[in-house]
Length: 184
Image (cartoon, rainbow, N blue to C red; front, side, top):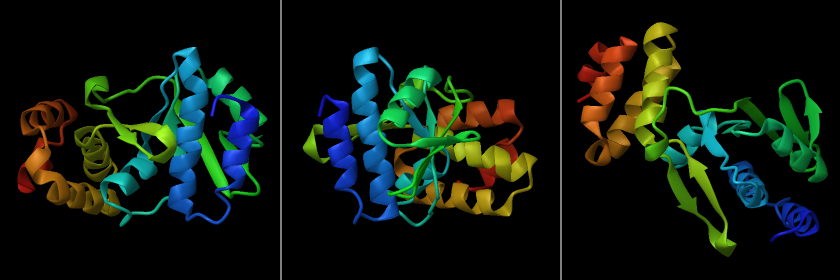
C-alpha cells in the first residue's frame, strides 16, 4: 500500500472490524504513508494501555506522537478524516485520532517497540515501562485511582520483562518511586 487510493480502500475494509482493530489498522496505514517522509508515529495514551493489557483496557481514540503534525494532518484529511478541535475524526469508521505532541516526552525513544501486523504493516508503541510510568505519574500526582489500577495491572502482566532499574531511576525523578516500590 503506497498510495492514498490503496490506503482508502484498506480503510473501507475495516468497517466490520472491532474498534481496537480499526484503531491499530488506521495507525498502521498512517505509519505506512508517513514513513517515506521519515516520520514515525508512536502510539501513546489509552491505545498503548489497551495494547499492553491485551484489550482489558479500552479507549475511544488514538493518541499519536508525530514529529510533523502538518504532514500527518494532510494525510488524515486525504484519508477522509475531518478535523474537530485537537482531533481528527472519520465519520464512517468512528475512529478519532489526536496528536497531542510532536516529541515523545518523558519516555525513552529506545524503548519504543515495533508491533508487526498482517500485510506487512506495523505500528510503533511507547515502551511498556514508559506507559506504566505515565500512568504512575497520573496515579500519584493527579490522584487518579483508575490510572493506579491500570499501571499496577500492566506491572503484573509484564513483571518479568520490565527494566526495573530504568523504572526506578525515572520514578525517583518523578516523585513516584514510593508507589512503584509497593508493586514489586
